[in-house]
Length: 104
Image (tube, rainbow, N blue to C red; front, side, top):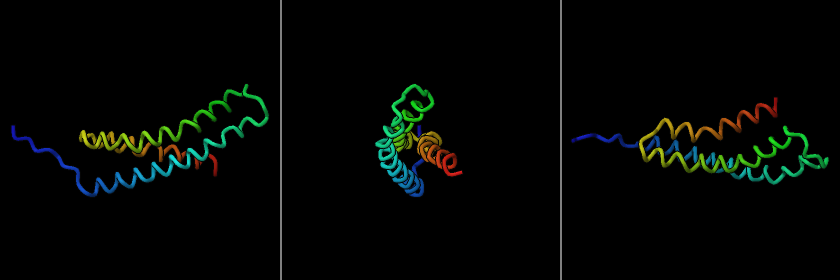
């Protein structure tokens, strides 16, 4: 059983380090944004289900970004590169989509 194991190259490691740093920056930004979610309810009404859903999603985004910063390293160790890339890029795509929605 002489199987060759595909090694992770230095370019892949550098790319994942950069993705991890971007995701950690998104964790900090999301945590800062989550601190402002009580301002959504200044009118005193929590009956608007869309507003509650927006507040919950804003508060859960830093958790998702943190999970997506750490979990790709596990999948990279398991040699599941496509899964690792998909998970690492997920918070970046969500943040880009939200930015496009807000700023256009």
